[in-house]
Length: 499
Image 1 (cartoon, one colour):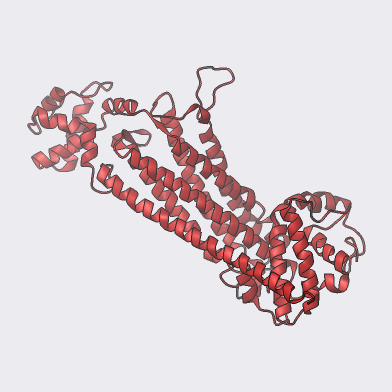
Image 2: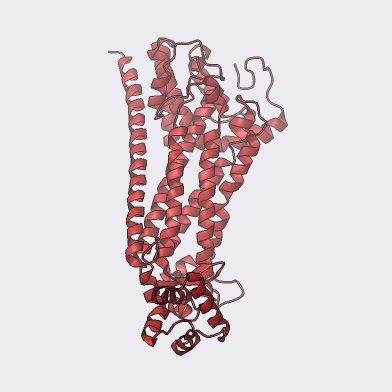
């Protein structure tokens, strides 16, 4: 049987179908799909032989070709040379076996399986790899942010609400808050691993098989934690793609918010932050420029998961609950470039966080002129005079309304302006107006006092270590599965060598 003639088909695909559908995907499929197809094939062939479904000699010959193709792929040689016309990777792959071994043996491996469960398994194996890599990148970002937050637990800067100066805080407090959301999202992504890591093999086209297969053994050899019980669910569901992209989309949104803040604070208007020359650019026309352009790359890459999520949901909408090209191919296609973009955004953010340079004197000067200690002054009226907070708030607000808006109030102005409300001495007013004192007092409610921030960072570091431990355990499990499959192949072939 030739590549162009198979089953009921007696002619090659139409030239336009070949140009638009089959040929464009072949290069990517060789790189991204073929390695997984080889592993799936080996596990399936071994299982068929163990179950007595496939004769041992036929299985051995198939596995020998499998070993040759795997070695060629590892060596970087071209595998599965394409004829002038073909119907995609799987048919080229199967034809290699048929051409080398003949139809009787070469075509025997496809018993009890379909392209449907194979495609479903490949997608889960690819997604598993992408997820683990993204989780590792998130753990690295969290570690870098925790380290910077610890280093800047006492670096005074203004907090902001509605883009206006708020109260004295620290850079460490800001980074602690952002890191908490990044880690929480990473933990959500990690929770999708068990949903994702289930084997669809054995479901065939969606209605199972009459052959007495051992699905659990195939799942173990492929590193899956179990099988998907329903054959229809196995080939029709891509909900795990939506789950992973949902987490990646939220992660991306958080990164854009962080990038926006960092770029704003690095602008000339603020001058709080900077980066070394290796991480900034200049203008093609304005020689004075130092542009933190990488933050714009972060924002651009980080949102791709959101677009992919919408595309996947739209691609799945109104499709029959069964296998189809829409479900197995078109709907999931946006996920792969989107997850690569998510990883790029995380890694770039990690680099910028690690190499961050601060300008503490600019941060302090901003605080001194921004009236950020007025809440502390209202708190003083509450503690010293027993005023209701709203009364104290109104009194301070009325005082500020009468003073020039372009200069911070002096001790004398405050003492005189509040004399009708409460008599305050100059020393306690000076203490209340000191941004560092205000920051140090904010040790409750998760505030920016250094002890509070360091307590937050200890918890974040612990969670980051726990995430790394989970990733490492999954990696070990997958390595053990690979070793088990390779060992099973070697043992099977050795048992059939002539003595």
